[in-house]
Amino acid sequence: MRHTTQAAILCGGRGERLKPLTDYFQKVMIPIGPKKLPLLAYTIAIMKRHGVTNVALLTGYRSEDIRRYFGNGSQHGVKLSYSEDQKGFKGSLNAVAHALRDGAVRCDELLIYYGDILTDLDVTGLLETHRKTRADVTLVLDRGYSLPVGVAEVKEGLVTSFREKPNIALSVTTGPMVVGPDAMALMKKFAGRSKPDLMTDFVPEMIRRGGKVGAFYTEKEWFDVGTVSSFVKLDEELAKHPLSYVGLSR
Image (cartoon, rainbow, N blue to C red; front, side, top):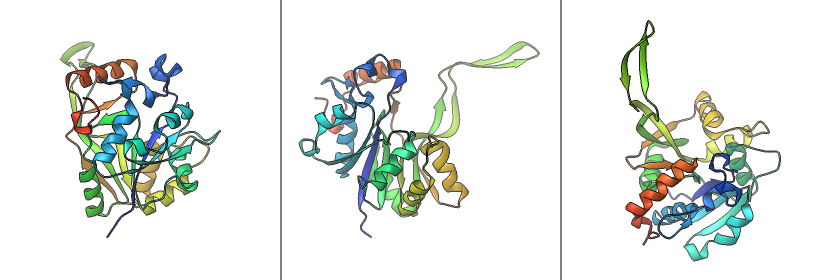
């Protein structure tokens, strides 16, 4: 069966935790890496590398900066469409539902990607797994999570053991997901004014309704670029280990 595949990249948030950088840039447009390219350029290049060349950018704050830089996508080897957040409708689920309604997204297989997360995601493997399992939703997960703080065990007021930044054996979401037709229909139906979230609201609702939610585990390192410190860490990583796999860093 031939699928019409599209990617939707969420890049409309104000990035409050990245202030003061986001006073001057949309968070996905902050220059990073040896060539000081926008973070979004890396994500788009990853999509292109895996043959996903139809990409919708879900914009909001400083949307004109993104449109001015990327245009129709032809210079980046992709076809871009845009969907700007509606005033009064916040939340990641509303952003995707609006893109589905206004025609920016037209497909039967949608890869949703958060613009402030960067990873060398095996998009090809993810799509193949989604199709093979015939899931309604496939979440990209990582095995385990390292806490950013130490953890103490306390008995009767005394610390009996201590572990610095332990790794917890849990399946944790990295953000990206693939959704099929039934899931997209539910998104349009479930979205509303209450700032609904894809992870907090949509995925649990899909499970509650008996939808098939699959798992795709990634072994790749991923960066959630939500704070200035995490952005600086990624910038340093790109300088030491250029992401040559997307052809942007050299």
